Length: 69
Image 1 (cartoon, rainbow, N blue to C red):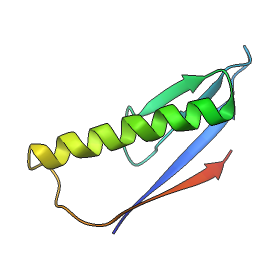
Image 2: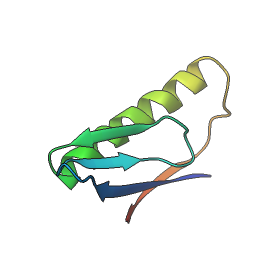
Image 3: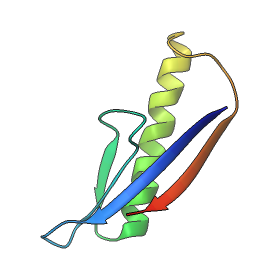
Image 4: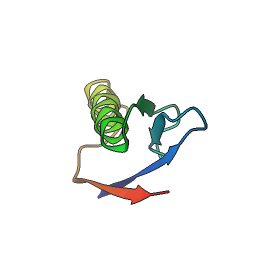
């Protein structure tokens, strides 16, 4: 089973950033925490789908949890 964590924090300029530490480069900004988290979830799923499509990852169960920073 693949467990992904989403970490988020507020930037100095007021924007929110969310990232998935287990997937380098998977991060997204949003005006609100919820928007940033939603965007990073979409991006993480796209990255995982690409890896599966190109046989870079084995199919299996996926669990995503949100961790507040």
